[in-house]
Each structure stands twice: as structure tokens, then as C-alpha cells.
Amino acid sequence: MKHSFASVVLGVYLGLMAGCGSSRTKPIASGGSVGGANAVGNMGRAGGMAGTAGLVPVAANTTVVLFLVDGVMGEAVQTAILNGATNLAFILANGVRVATSHSTSPAAVIQLPDGSPGGTQPWAHATSGNVAVHTGCHLFESNQMDDIFLAARAAGIKSVYSGGDDNYAVFTTADFHYGMMMDDATTVQHAIDHLKNDGARLLRIHLQRVRDFWTGPSDKTTADSAYIQHLIAVDGLLGNLIQALKDAGVWESTYLIVAADHGMGQAASSTHAASTPSSWDPFMAFYGPGLKRGATIPYAELPDIAVTTVYFFGLAPLRGHLDPLVNIPVMGTTGTVLTNLFEGTPADVPHPRYIERCLSMGAACTSAGDDFGPYRQTMLNLIRP
Image 1 (cartoon, rainbow, N blue to C red):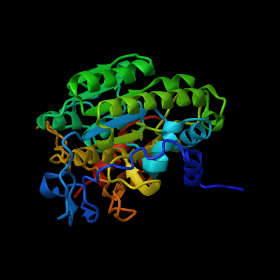
Image 2 (image 1 turned 60 degrees about the vertical axis):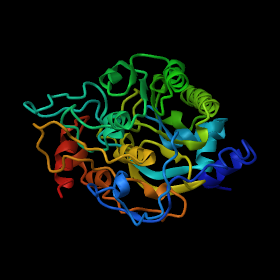
Image 3 (image 1 turned 180 degrees about the vertical axis):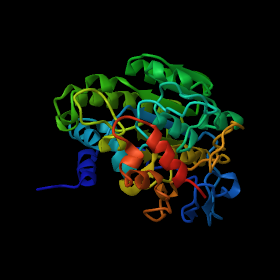
């Protein structure tokens, strides 16, 4: 007999952690709809939610955690849950999973044309998905961009970025930032330390080591593969983080986003070429006060995470590109605030689905290899007002 993924998750977690999160205060009223990419936020909130007269103030100790596991996809999460990943199971049984989630180009680097204002590689060797979850944009023409860390600092919210690879040294706008080769436990511990010692309320964690265990796409569905076994260990680190949030007294007002910066390819090597469809499909799920429980929303893209993060905090919209030399059709954010995550809202929101539309154009978006250029050119055309 076949069971839906949602029913399996609920069954695995039935009776576990009973009552955890059940007394959360709902900080944002349900209802309303989200405008387009550049809609003006209501009452200073990011992203243009309309019809929100019943908004309740965001809790003073609201905390947002972006917990990214490099390259992880839905099949791998499902396999890990069925084999003991109880914290991931809890998030899906009590939060919201995205049925179809897409990354911005999974190409290894953001390579711009020669002579561009931000340089040929404005974000060094960080993937575009990593930049997207911070900036809320689909294009990354310069490293002078507004992001969730700058927005948090302006509001007096301390932040920490901890990423387990040298490629992430480029992300320096958080109050505390680590971008170096690290094991996953150390990467998580940096965030926990600043939560405990400095009261950080924006935690951005990027675990890299799971990629070390990749031997091919069959790993995602093989319970005893080293890849899945490491993902189960990552689940334990997530549990440590959740306990630290509880110990700090902020778990009940915490929004937790579990996602990845891209999917994985079909090769035995740990690659995610833009020409491979699965490379565009990261896992994405949300948990927090006032959000739906055990639910699924149909669609989201990585830039949505950034604009939804500042919405959770009740902050003004992100500003997108700040470099005066950049000249593109939309300088501001192009992500969509996912208000359909909240209880009492419709299943879907008006979403331009830029990446889905880009992918439908085939080689015009994905190229024949791992080139960022075709995606960039197609997106320049898609985001035009």
C-alpha cells in the first residue's frame, strides 16, 4: 500500500514531542494576498501583503533561523525521516513543506560579462542560491546589495552567519560571520554560541559536509548510504539547535526555515550543473508561530526566503541592488512573500514563478553545461515590469 509523504511523516511523528509548539502565539493575522515583486509592504512589512487590518505586532523576541543543508533534496529528507530523523519529521508534521521549490541558477559561480560593474564574479565562489536567500533577488549584479543581515542590524537585531566552506567567506554583513572549511557540528555551534552569549536572533547556518558523502543520486533513497546516515547526523545537530532555542526562551517565537541552496545532479561526483534539471530542486520547509501545521504549499523559490524572513521580523522591505553602477530592469527585490504559510490563508499566492518560467525555456535558461550566463540573460527579460 502506498502512502503520501505527508501521511508517512505524520505517522512517524505521531505521539512524539507531544504538545511541542502547541502554545505558540500567532503574531501575524491571516488573510490577504501578496502583490507582485515590487509591491509596497503594508504597515512597514516586507513584500506587499494586502488586506491585513488585523495584523498583530511581531513578538519582541522573534527569532528566525535559516538552516541550509547543501544540496539536500526532498527524496533524501523523506528517506532520512523514515530512518530516524525525528527533528525533520517534527518540522514537516507541524509546519509547511513546499511541493515544488526552485533555486536560482545552480551554476557553480555567478559569472557576469566582462566589464560588469560588480566584476566578473562579484560573489566569489558562492552559489547564487546562497545570495538569493539573503537578498530576495533573482539577479546578483554586484556585491553591493541589501540583505537580511543589514535589515536586522538596522532594527537592532543581532545576526550570525556560519557556513562550512571557504566559499562562504564572502558573506560578511552579519554581525558575526564564519565562512571557512568546518565540520557541521562546529558550524552549528557557532550559531548556538552567539544565540546564548550575544542574543543573536537571526541565525543563518549552512552545513556543507553532507556533500562529502555523495556517491550518486541513488544515495537519496538508500537508507544505509553514507549520505543518508550523515543527513541523520545533521538531524541530530538540528535537534541540538532546537534545544538551544528552547533554553534561550525563544523557541515559541522562532521561525525555522530548512532548505538548501540548490539540488544535486545525476553524476557520481558531487556536482550540480545548471544543465541538469534536478540541480534546480532544493528541499524547502517552514515552521513557526501562526504557520499551518502538516501542510503543503504548491510553490516557492529561494529569493522568497529572504523577503519572507524580513516579513517574519516585521521589517521594511529589502532594497535589492544598491550599487549605482548597476542598470537592470528591477533594482529591488523580486522574491515573493509567502503569506500562504500562515493559518487561515489560501493554499497559494499570486507568484510570478520566474524560475519555473525560465526552466520552461530549456537551453535558453540552463545552457549545455554549468554556465550562469543563459539564466542571467533570460531572467533579465523575465523580471521586466
